[in-house]
Image: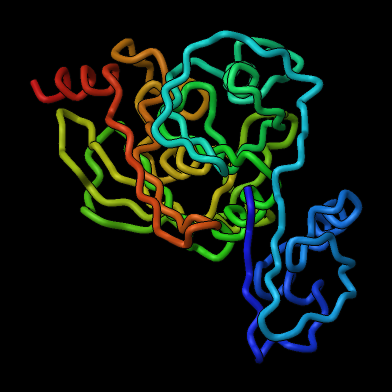
Length: 297
């Protein structure tokens, strides 16, 4: 992937490093990596970052440094691609699949499947998640194909340019058709996985709106202002309307669905290279559709 910047009279006299940082928004870490392998060019020739540019110069940055993922075993597993280009790949994650290998799940993960996908395409890439989903949450998950794209999209999340929406089905009738849950979340003492509401936790903000009222249940759309671990699940429990099927955060047993009824349905972000806004959606999966049909009766 190539980034190009045309030097104007206003830029004349500046160092290449300043152009990279303030015009192309490259991190110091990435600049350091690229300069040692001659991936920073001025008028088609490798150049030092202290080089002074002049009006009419053309700065090119060759981003795609080959980075083979050494600790993830490629596996021929099905993946459902929503969008892919030279800089990123977006998947529709299915239920029951872990995103990244852990000591408990070394294989059978999304990362293993992506490693295989890159391998058969002849691409040497690290697995670079931009967003993450719990094992039993379905829907959209975004991966960058290089460090630049990953850094840019993570910055967009921090600045609220990157938008994420979820659909969930909760127990009970939520009285207000719209609302905001602003409660801090922290790791629950004594637990590796579970989170809880705590005044010492990090600020967490979830906005919601009612999509449909069901039989002693409500289908909600969630808009995340922050991205804490298990945020929607913890917040739903906190307001007394836990997600149906959530065995970690709900005391209400359910045999209607084998997982928490939560789906990442929509993302929108500005593509770091083309600067166009990308909008992607993933349909509600069958198990949640079936659950809604049952709860309509």
